[in-house]
Length: 70
Image (tube, rainbow, N blue to C red; front, side, top):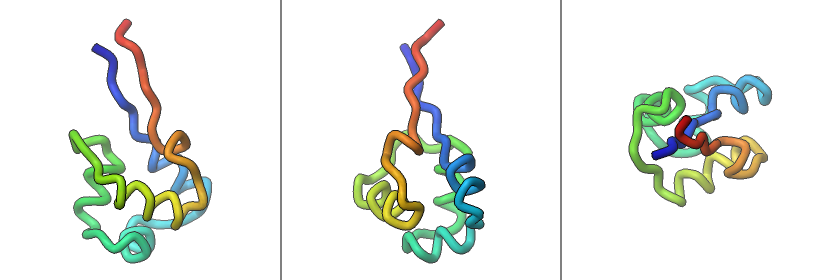
């Protein structure tokens, strides 16, 4: 089975925004955003994904990537 790779750290770096600032804009706890950024979650709410995309002015595809099993 393939996997989903979270590219939130890359988009944050491109936008020059820190974890604390993004967490505040999105309205979630720093620790939860950190878990998402590091790929330590098994699910993400669409409302959270929408808030992140709005804050970073990006598309969900900029944040998530599918990698097929090799």
